[in-house]
Every structure is written in structure tokens, then in C-alpha cells.
Length: 256
Image 1 (cartoon, rainbow, N blue to C red):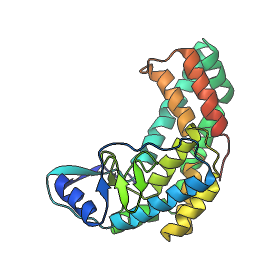
Image 2 (cartoon, rainbow, N blue to C red):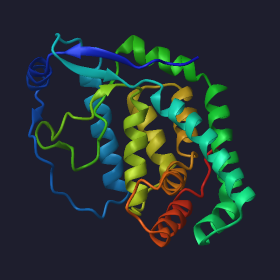
Image 3 (tube, rainbow, N blue to C red):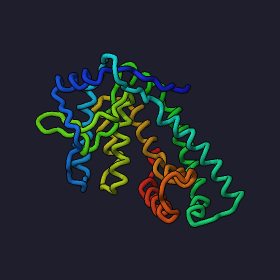
């Protein structure tokens, strides 16, 4: 099953009015916050995220600018990514290792790809389509960026930027938040954040399994590999090698 991209037209002003009527301010500037986030503050931010999701459920707007549906997009992109990188792995084997980055790919690339495929298989066998159906029926909305720079509660909710808002599985906001914390090397317990999110959101075990799987996908490691493959980023091979080693370190733990 492929979830095709859908665009639902929404009047930008009316969604801002809707949020304002719910006591949510749109500041249009990011918030300053302490970057040294530890477990307690991360949990508090997850609860803020959940409470915002409850407010956003079932929003139906007017008809001018677009609020996209990105449901299923993440997993479909991963499936395409795996196919491309499997070909690149074979290319490196056929052509021979040219540098230290490719040496690391030959050493660990196959393991990363096998882990990625295992995650996709796990997701599809743990009621993925049921989660999608729930999200569509409830018209769930994600803000796309629910970290401390974009989402704040100070007597009322404040959102800095609506740019990344879309119809999507609410789980995706938590997943993106966890990845951001990992990149900053914050001291967090991923499973604890997942449990808090699922419990506070009153979701089923399917969401717990889905989030554990997502956080077992070597997203950043494969993304660095893709950057090397396409050569679109202005990074040297040495810089990409450092990035790959760093991401492999914080993505080393599997939750499934």
C-alpha cells in the first residue's frame, strides 16, 4: 500500500485564528533556550507536544494556502533510500575502495542496510496501516518541529513557525524531536520518552512498536551516506566521515 501525497487547501489566516482562539500564539520568531537538555526537560517538552496535539485534532480549515498531508511519506522515502544505497554498496565493491569513507561503508554499510530493512519489515507487521487509519480518521496534525526553539508553553502555548505543519501521524513529531536531541548529544532515555508520549497521548501499543522501530532506523547514518553518494553537499570526504562516525555512535542502539 502506498499513501499518495495529498494536499488539503487551508486558509492560512483561519488556521492562525483557530490557534489564537485556542489560546496559542504564533510568534514568527524562534525561542532562545538552554541547549543542555536532560531527561526531565525532554519529558516536559514531550508532554507539551502531546497537549498541543490534543488541541490540533480534527482541524478543518478553509481554502487558500496549503496544509499538506505527509502521512506515509517518511517510510516510503526510507524504502527508496535503501534501494539506492544497496546499489551504491555494490558499486563500491565493484569499483574498489577509493577513500576512508568508502572503507567504513564496506565495513558497516551492509549492517546498516540490513538494520534498515529489518525496521521497515517490523513496521509493516505491527499494524502500520492501522496507525495510518487512526491518524486519518482523527485528522491528526503535526507541527513538524516540536523542539524548544519552536514550541513553548508560558501561561499559554506559543509556536514560532507553522512552516512544517502538516497532516501526519502524531508519532512523527516525537520521532523528529528525539533525533534532534540525539544529534545534540543530549542525555535522554529514548524508550522513556516513547512511553511518556504513548501514555499521555492515550495511544495503543501499536504506536509504541512504531516509535521503537523508527528509532531503530539508522536515519542520520544513511543520510550522510546519501550525501556522499550524490555529492550535493559542500562537505569534504573527511567531514562526511566524521559525521558518519558520529551518527553511527548515537544510532548504535536498536529498540526492536
